[in-house]
Every structure is written in structure tokens, then in C-alpha cells.
Image (cartoon, rainbow, N blue to C red; front, side, top):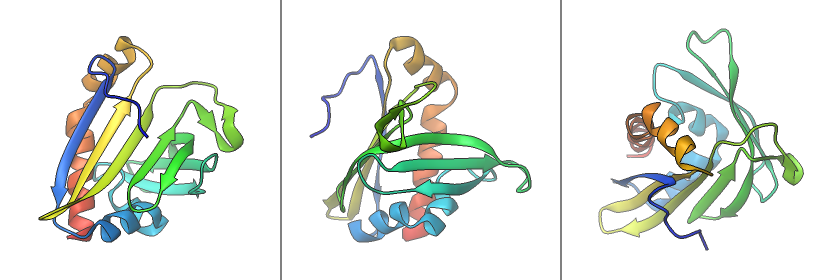
Length: 155
């Protein structure tokens, strides 16, 4: 079960992807596919660790030039429910160890829809300031672009 929505702290984007749920799931859990859509192009993503189990490491890096990569996500998975839900956070790292800094817990859900898959991504924040900062950084454009890129990979 996912925490109930908290409009003052959460940001959400959703889209119907015209592909079977298994295709969307596989694009999420296969590092090679994941790198194709995880960050808005032309930025490039590299998966460093993706241990898809509760407590497993999730670490990505990004690059604007394809040469120098810097940190992007360093966290761990909280839940991995096949074909349904993936939850990760940067509040913890592998093995449930506390991280140096926490900003977001993200919940991705996938559900059957008559036209394919309903994909919803929710970013949960610890306070209003973090939520507002994420929104000002371009959450809706960025995460919306990423879902569009995911759709392009699987449709």
C-alpha cells in the first residue's frame, strides 16, 4: 500500500501509455532500456546500480556531454511489486542505511487501461519547501518529458 496523497507535499504526473503493462515494466527494470528514457534528452543517464528489491541500491548518473558524468539518484528501493509498483527514496541507500541528504521518495504505479497502461509517478517530499523547490525546478515538465520518452521506447 502507498501512503495517501498529500497535495501540499506531493507532485504527480500521469499518462496513458499505449503499450502493455509488461512492456512498461520491462523498460523500467532493464538498465539498458531505462537509460534510454530516465532523464530528459539530450541529457544522458547511466545506471551504476539497480538492485531491484526492497533495500537494494538504486544509483544513476547523468551527463550533458556524454563524457563527464555526475551523480543523479543515490538511494534504495523500498518496494518492487512486479508489474504494479516501484518505490524508491534518496533518504536511504543500499541496505537501508541513512543517506547524507534526503529530498524525495518516488512512487511509480502501473495499471491496466483499455488503451494500454496507466502510468503514474508521484514525488513525495518531507516538507512544503522541498515540494515547492521541486516544482520550481521543473518537476511537471521534466517528469512529463520522461514519461513521454518512456512511452516512445515501448509504444
